[in-house]
Length: 315
Ligand code: SF4
Image 1 (cartoon, rainbow, N blue to C red):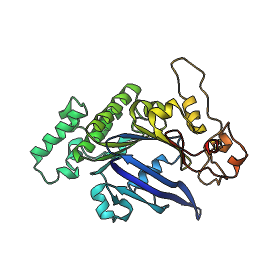
Image 2 (image 1 turned 45 degrees about the vertical axis):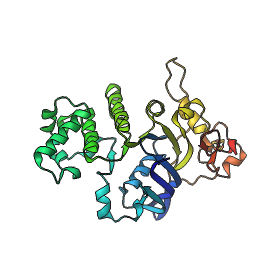
Image 3 (image 1 turned 90 degrees about the vertical axis):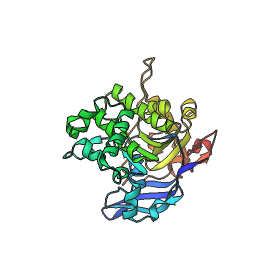
Image 4 (image 1 turned 30 degrees about the horizontal axis):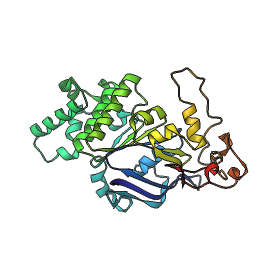
């Protein structure tokens, strides 16, 4: 398997009132090149911390206490900040939940696109041609108008297209998409997800963060389910839907709307804050299959039926 990203024993925590609390616990994950990989779970599961750890965009109280992040065999955690700036935004791009965060409200779209690193050493006419081609690829029709606009003059979907065009211009190999459709209407959201499929077909690798398992099923090749900083299940996405194993995955799937109008099951309880220390399996207070060992001993991630799963039901 050609792996673009390999995460080994990654632990990221936050210092809160002088104590270190972990938001990522011993994460080991491989990402195959040219695929869409989903990271799924409720808010607070550690998905965004994972992406921000890769991009080294963590707040000051964050600590990466151990681990390795190999991007094309280069350990990103060994790279100095000034060198990392050449990777962030060029080889690895971020599509954020709120595209407004990635666009400077003071500059017109054209000026912002001309600032993309890969365009800095070519003449303006050539650069503009590349920009127009990229905007065309993300199916923006009124290109000249968009180029002359400030971000606040564009709709959410249009801003998200501009961000994806930026990733195309920079020729990023790896795209981290952090709930890129959450703020959009369903029809716009589908068109953005279809653009991600186009990027995959051009050989890009995408890590897509979502809490919506229907997106995982329809658009992703593999899925990793996270709960409170732990990987609880990892499988090819179709396999995960056909035959979910972890009770948390099952609960997420039961909460999905179905065409048959079946009553949706809510997941009991709420996700705990990272400051709460939980003995045993972190999901045990919400799990309908909980047994005695679950409250005292944490299950490890093991191979089971074409996936990895961390649950005492399969030990
Ligand atoms: Fe439920 Fe126990 Fe499995 Fe945790 S280990 S998901 S509590 S059955």
